[in-house]
Image (cartoon, rainbow, N blue to C red; front, side, top):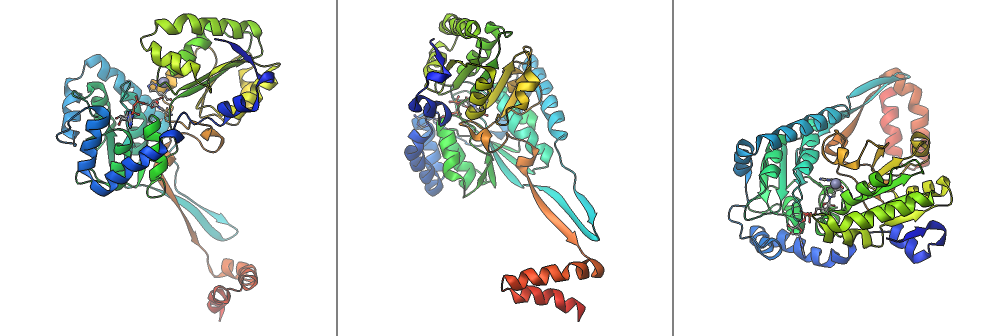
Length: 422
Ligand SMILES: NC(=O)c1ccc[n+]([C@@H]2O[C@H](COP(=O)([O-])OP(=O)(O)OC[C@H]3O[C@@H](n4cnc5c(N)ncnc54)[C@H](O)[C@@H]3O)[C@@H](O)[C@H]2O)c1
Ligand SMILES: N[C@H](CO)Cc1c[nH]c[nH+]1
Ligand SMILES: [Zn+2]
């Protein structure tokens, strides 16, 4: 792989890096057709798309019982790993649960309370790879938030992946449907004869899933666009090129459209990382996918003239995962605001957060981290403000309210205050 200097990047190269969309826009028209048909035709369309895109004749779309059975039968070592990961994810997300509060503000009692959504849909991917970990990342926080009915949609297969089913059951999903891709998202958003419609669709997926979430947004709520995986490793000369390359290769194996980047001010590290990528990619089990991801125009190894230039690059990229492998990692982190999830130091591979440390791996891609954060307990909550004023506190505020109300020409508002003092 060629090392590119940031200084020499032209406008088209910068746009490919910083306005990347991982092919999502290119499938928007196709996805609109799929979503419309599922909304209009329900299970018939779902079954047809399962046949067309997954090559599977789906009988019963509802596989909730199969998930319970898989939980009984799955390899005990896999179940133990699922349970430990679920415990860690639960512990981290319980820490996020906000408390209701009321406080006195000069005699005005004001507060906020939080209530869970009632019905949410979690997309659990499963095309090119199996994703039991994504089942935990979507369902566990929803249950911690107190969502009553959590449904899951996951792609069909001649034989559904037992670890994915077991994780869905372990996480506490209430219903599981065997439908993936854009049709899975649409089924949860609009409901079908079999699938219960939900208020919010969350979860990661490939470009068809991501385009479908963009399509249904507005009719139902969504979390954000969590498309093909991304990592940016910000490294200085102290980093080990084998670790830097390993973190890039790990995310590259998700999808041809994954984006993986290393940025450093050290020419030797840049060259060694590029060599390591070239040496290791061809031998990987998913070599074709890895090589496609490394070749895409939002991926690469970049040389900065200074760590300040590298930091600016990382900020503009706003990666889903930001790994900092450098001596002054905390100082560099202080200078970056935009990243989905941050991994500090040589012994914090992105894979730790992908599976088991406890943080959520459903994270914004395509620069979404400039505007919002990843999946959390708040994703599943709505907040309501509450207030109580007494006669004295209303009296103290009445002049301000009536003056503003009259300035707006809304005399009924002013009158609703004055009447209380007549
Ligand atoms: N950003 C995040 O938080 C995050 C987390 C985990 C995984 N991911 C990403 O999730 C994705 C998982 O992808 P996957 O493919 O393994 O599983 P997936 O479940 O996302 O997609 C599989 C579905 O894609 C649909 N599909 C495939 N080809 C199609 C076509 N030509 N036309 C229409 N639909 C088609 C099929 O319906 C299939 O069921 C990867 O891109 C991975 O990087 C992202
Ligand atoms: N890296 C993915 C998020 O982009 C999450 C994941 C699941 N399994 C392995 N990795
Ligand atoms: Zn991953």
